[in-house]
Amino acid sequence: MKSFRFWIFLVGLSCLPLAGLFFGTQALAETTAPAAINNPNPGIELWQAVRGKLDSPTATQVRGHDSSVLVNPQGELWMSIRNSRLIPQGGQALLVVLLIILGVYAVRGPVKLASGESGRQVDRHSVNSRIIHWLVAGLFVILGITGLFLLLGRPLLIPVIGKTAFSVIAAASKEVHNILGPLFPFALIFMFVNLVRRNLYEKGDLAWVAKGGGMLGGGHVSAGMFNAGEKILFWSTIFLGIGISVTGYVLDFPNIASWVLATSTEFTQYRHVMGYAHVIHSVIAVLFIALAFGHIFLATLFVPGTLSSMTSGKVDSNWAKEHHDRWYEEIRNKSSGDNADP
Amino acid sequence: MARMKFLCDAERCIECNGCVTACKNENDIPWGVNRRRVVTINDGNHGERSISVACMHCSDAPCATVCPVDCFYTTNDGVVLHDKDICIGCGYCFYACPFGAPQFPDSGAFGSRGKMDKCTFCAGGPEQNNSVEEHRKYGANRLAQGKLPLCAEMCATKALLAGDGDRVSDIFRERVMYRGAGALQWGWGVAYDKQGIKG
Ligand code: HEM
Ligand code: SF4
Ligand code: SF4
Image (cartoon, rainbow over all chains, first blue to last red):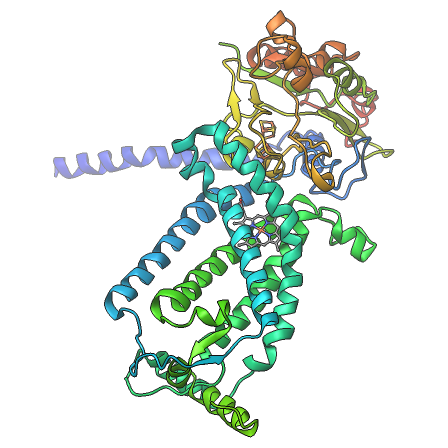
């Protein structure tokens, strides 16, 4: 019995702090809080205005798109995208594409003509077509190489050749890229006009895609002047080309929006606009270069006999029969109409 | 080792642009390039404040991390400098810099960007200290002469402070203590005891 009372006493004792808490909060609620000092911190608005977050009128004697913004934090996004995505992942993507191409070549080897060469040549591309093709290709290779120097030179070349030598290459790359870049869309327009008629959808294109261009399922794949793969290449070139040219012009001419639109409001080329243009330009560039790797591989190593269509303009008649049967029929009908030897 | 810093006291700057002029003169900066600028916030309104800004000589400087030719270096005094012999004038440092510090004179074909120019904390560049070559490319090297940047030395109200970060913050802390209630409580609202009026 005695010990029971002792335990009650002990539990009561341990509850005492709780009681203190209860009366304490009551006492706090009764005393009125001292009047709050009405002293707002004017620094809040000032430092928000400093970061350009308020529409407060700002002025400076220095001219520039956003020279009256004291702190512009938007470059940080661009910086992190370029440093930790574009440079490492762009480089890796191109490497992976090259490895895939090597793999495909090793496994499937070159696609030789089943019936061998006939020795008879047929005309495929006119002089105009060839000039336009090499104009686009030449500009593309120069722009791609100079652009990649700027993107990947610091991690890949500076450790090998040093800063001074790389600076010479980079300066030349910048100058050449800035001057030749604006010509690229014009070459692209020529190419569009020249080839668009032959790159529209035709019956048989879907079947060509379904058979993977002959890589899947075996059997013969029928194609016209351009097969579906080449049409995909054409339209990708056009759309990637438009994207890379628009963003390229934005980067090259920092006042172009104001000139073209004769306004300087939403489209003013502020730093973040340039940042977005640069990221889109570089992402398209990597895709475009990967596409070009594939195109060059197919047209040279993988399908022998193709390259001559862009050099001499002629291909072997068996090449035409096997790879572009419907086109071969077409030109044969045409030339037999002319009474010429097919 | 000192860590050089600028600080502009927004309660003192009167937008006289003396620092801008001092900088242009001391460093023989070409037309169109402004290493330092004064920005006035709330211009013409109540609560107007001005702040003078130039390169802030960031630790882990963003400009340096994006430069495709890696031409920036940080001196032992914590000053961020660059090598104009290596710079290609691509403008990437300007995209990355939060303060709009890098500047580009027109040059090259079709008026493309020339080599970047920015505040050097009056510390010149990689050339021999105070050589003719150094002055031509980067302007003054006052640090090598034991002097501080001229913009701050010329500032009539001592709003713009430059020097070892510890000393600069000591001076500013003392000012804030004297002003009482917060870094910015110094305007007529406080003087006339009009609570709630900012500035
Ligand atoms: C055809 C293909 C093109 C490719 C593959 C290409 C590729 C690239 C690459 C990889 C960069 C470097 C990005 C970096 O360093 O972070 C770049 C930058 C740039 N490109 Fe292109 N580009 C092409 C077309 C164009 C066109 C058509 C224009 C202009 C109309 C243009 C203008 C620019 C400009 C201004 C830069 C910034 C370089 C600098 O400021 O020094 N590019 N390009
Ligand atoms: S240029 Fe800009 S980013 Fe570079 S150190 Fe100066 S303030 Fe920092
Ligand atoms: S402008 Fe010069 S310093 Fe600036 S990032 Fe380009 S190369 Fe580097």
